[in-house]
Every structure is written in structure tokens, then in C-alpha cells.
Length: 623
Image (cartoon, rainbow, N blue to C red; front, side, top):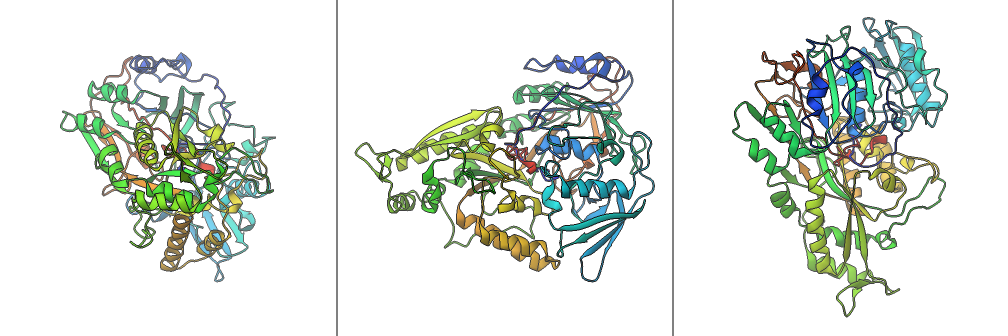
């Protein structure tokens, strides 16, 4: 999320981040207190000082994913990177129609004949929320910090590894010099921050951007208040160069109970609901045909996968964690995946609201979508899976259990997101399918999968990412360069993959400007990942959301023709949202729409997630 899930992409699983409570700001109002009363789980109400002023139009988004960090240099989860996208501009944006690059902070750009020097014209009509002018120097400082400070490169360092030098010859001219050609120069999903604020940060690994409010930014919204695991409050930026949002305030509110959010939608207490990361089939079905409720069911940009821990390791060669050593054998990994019936998962768990998983990039991105040939496919074949296990030396004993030469039965721990019902449902199928092979399984469902994931304390894990129109980020998290520097550090790696063949293909696609040739290289990378068997993409879930048409007059989807609303590639949905004429059910005289989204990681999917860089929170979080 992007930001892939930064927009992790982001994933809904891992990445540790420190959380701090904010100082209350702004005027009092009753909307937040009214909203907190409908939550099924007890949460701290927004303090009066942070409430909306009477008469303000407030859009409240309920989320089932916590913020890992409010620093754009650390944030990896989908929720976190989505908030960053609202606070800070990128050089370019993705058009909501077909995702082609459009002006953001840069009004235009050009490359030298050798593609090694890129020049961007920075707009002169953008200001930071404290009134200072946004300049090319802010962008140069941001990129330079990513290039020179390892702590600042945690989330987005992959974008600048090929940069040689970044300068700002004038307030409206940014020049980036490259070591080699780089095809992602109109897809640099890096939040540009104000130098005059961030130059005072002493340690980027510890600063979470939540100590002083309002937070200075230049995006469509300004962060005004935050409390860990409770809420994030943003105020509309009336001076935003693209135009002010239609809602005066936007609130992301921690909302753990997904069924309660759906019930609140029916009663008109909330206006928009998405799931973790999508509504379950039962929830979507219960809302179909309801008066004043529209269910948005569109092809998603996420994949839902099962990742292995092939042995956690750092760049310095040190190994850590406690992943099962049997997973180092490609035959074992392939056997586990050949015992997974993707059709059953799509039909029974997603009830048709998904497509069967194949390659790494979802079919929504037609240029990069890849699927294996019939002869190479790791199709559902329990008998073939059993033969692979036999060949790998894991045969059944008298009790029907698969054991190695040391006599130890195979038994895997599978990390599961406690907030994602799909993980639990698929987990039960895995237990049944693997038991037939003689393999035991423990489903470890946690609210926080980040810590054990980063520490390598798992065997397999439910994984997922939201993919951006340019797939570079989700491709980069499988490179050797994404590994943590040492076991004590955090890297953007997804599951500790380090394969030199894959790295060579990654470098080639990054330098390839011809769209067709680059797409071919990306597909070779997907093919390599598939053959290695470190990750099994089980499904491509639809983006299933619902909203009240009597409270939301219009809201942008991406792509515009048939796309999603929450967690899209940009800020288009919340910036474009137009309230209906009715005042909804909010109290205290507020005329705002109350919108609820339950977004479960990593992402993640991510994941559930929904979030990496890191974007990791596993998938959802993982951006």
C-alpha cells in the first residue's frame, strides 16, 4: 500500500510501529460521541476538543486496522499509507479513469535522451498548511533523506536505490539523476514532506509524526488529532490546489466488529461499510436489495495468498526466527500448495466474490497478469502432493503422520489475522486438506501478526497485498535488497526471499521503458516466484463494499468504470465524496455523513492486509 498498500498496498500483516496518543485539538461537537455509542466494542470516544464544530460535514470511516505509524518514512499498513496519501502530495498521481500518470505536486516532467536525468516542474500554487510555499527543495530534501538515512528509508527506500543525486536548481525545478534508466519515474509513490518541519527530526526510526497537531501537510486533508487504536481525525484543506474536499472533516475510527458495522449501515447510523478487506458474502447478500443501500462488487486489486517462512535471514547472513526447516525444501512447499483447492476457496469461502489465484499480479492489471501453463500449474492434486512428500523424505508412519528422518512429525503453525473471517475459514480447510496428507496444523489467529512475522516466528502465514497500477513496489519486496540489514532491523521483505535470478529480472524490468518489454519481464518474475513456491496466491478477492445512497450522493471509484472505493490508488474517493442533501443520523447538529469502513488487514491483506514497505503489514497493511 503504496504508497503501495503502499497501498501495502499495503498488507494487513506485519511491520512493527510505535503508536503515540495525540494532543486534543479543535472545537467541541457531539458527532463522535454519538458514533461511539453504536460500536459493539468499547472504544475511547473522541475528546471534546477533537470533535467537529457544529454544522460541519463529517465523514467517519470505521476501520478494523490500527495505525502502525503516522510517519511517511515508517508507515506500511494500508490504513497508515491511506492516511499519508491524504496528508502529503506525491510528484504524480494515478488518473482514476485508467491509472495513467497525471500531475500531482509536479505539473510536468521530462527525461534526457539517455533517460538518466529527469526534470520535474513543481507547481507554484501549492502551500503547506502552515502557509509556507511548497518548493522543489522540499522534494529534493525528502528524496535525499531516503537516500542517506537508513532509518528514513524503512518504508520507501526502494524507490531511490537507483538515484545518484537529487537537486533543486530553483523553487519550481526538481532534477533527479539516475545511475541507470528507471521506468518508474512517473510512479514514485513517495509522500513529499516539508523540509522546514522534518529537518528538526533527530531519529527517524523513533519519530511517529504524532507529537504536534495539526500536522503540517499539503494534501487534501490535514491531520488534526490521533489516538492509538481509537481514531485519526483530519480536517479538509481549504487551500488544496486541486480544490477543497466536500466534507469538512474525515475521521478514521477503530471499529473492530464487522457485523455491527453492517447493522449500523442498515439503520442509517453509518453510510459506508467495507470489510476486512471486503464484506463477507453473507454480509453482502444481506444488504442486497435493501432500501437506500448500494452494494459495490468490483474486481479488486488485491491478492490473497499463503506465504511460507523459508528461513528468516538478514543481509549480513545471520539467520533468525524458528521457521520449520522442512520448508527449505521446494518439494515440500509445492506439496502443501498442491493440497489447496482454490476452487473450493472461491466457491465456499468467497462464495463467488473472487477469482481463482494464479500469478502474483491480479487480473485487473491486464498488462502484467500472468498465469502458469497447464503443465506447470501447481493444481489441486493430493496424490501428486503425497508423492512429492515421499520424495522429500517425509513418509507416513504407522499413525499416518508424515515424519522426517529424525522421526519428528510435520506440524505447521499458520499465522492468521484475527480480524479476517476469511483467514479462519480457509484455515479450517487447510487443516482438513493437510491432515489427509498426514500433516498437522495449528491456526494462530492474532490481532497483531506484525511482531511474530518480522521476527520470523512462524511457518506459514496468510498474506496479501494491494497492488498499484505500477507493480514495482510489490515486486521489490521479494528482492535480496529488501531483507533487514541485521536481525534487529526491519526490512520491507515479504517473506525473506532472496533469489539472484529473480533479482536480475527485477533490475532489468526497472530499467525497461518499452511497456511491452517491461510487462514481459514482470511476467518472468511472476513465473520465477511461482516456481520457487514461497507464496501460493489462492484468490483475487473482489472489492465488496456498501453505502447508503440517501447519505452519499456520489463517490469516486477506481477505475471509474468498475472499481473500488476504499484503499484505491490515491485520494480520489474521500476527496471526491459528495454528501447527500439529508443530514444522516449524526447528532449534535452536524450535517455530516457518518461513514464506516471495516478494513482488516495486510496489506496488508492482506491481507487482510488491507498492509509493504514497508508496506507490510501483511497485506493489507501492507499496503
